[in-house]
Length: 280
Image (cartoon, rainbow, N blue to C red; front, side, top):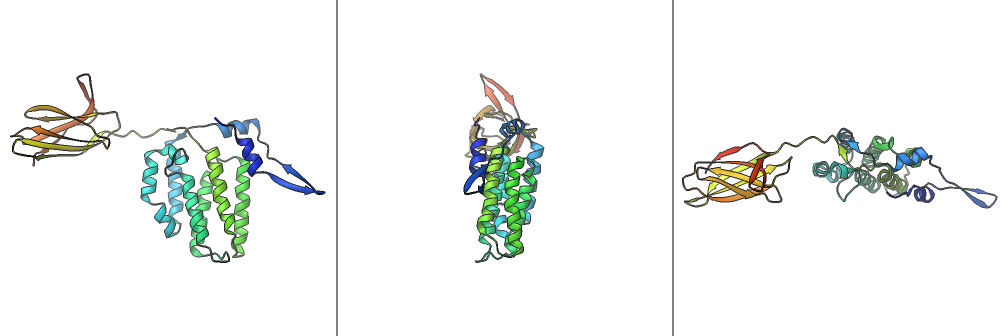
């Protein structure tokens, strides 16, 4: 674990006051308790993850069409595959990316002289909604920094002359503080995935052979499909995409059944129910 809060405070949250020609600096000081809370890689429950995801989705719905196109259903679907990565643990969709996308489009939607447009208003409002969802989990000193930029932006919006850098700063500081303070190592209470064969087909490959193919959704460890015909039992190794296929000698086969499980040392333990199909 890297104890880098001091560097962050001195380089970003440094405030300077000029007194009698001498520059004095005021550095925000974190208490021991605040330091511990900041540096703790506390797990987050699946329920909290879904709350965060739904809040960001709701914000996207109020945003411009450009943001909706970028933060689409596929974005959230990829995020849901590994919820812990949604908090910035890997190069995959994560929540602060949503803020960055909204800010980028908001800036591009301003007029030449910083005039406010309807599209800008939608994306700026979405930015604030995302920030509000996570604000309470950021250290107070960091909330203060972002709040100051938001106050400045609101004043500029009221005057219809917005500094694009101010909007970008909201996103950039949010991203940095988010990754610093909200970084769970795991998601608890993940719903169990039920293993099942999602697709199974059996087709005549020739007069004597039947080709059996299938795909499976796994919630438990499995490595083989067990396939049965009137000629007996055969096994097909699962491929990386959780699929299997096997050519089986069964000239008179009318039906084929299959189940998926873990095969080792001559013993097969199934993890899915048996699925049966007619040979076509």
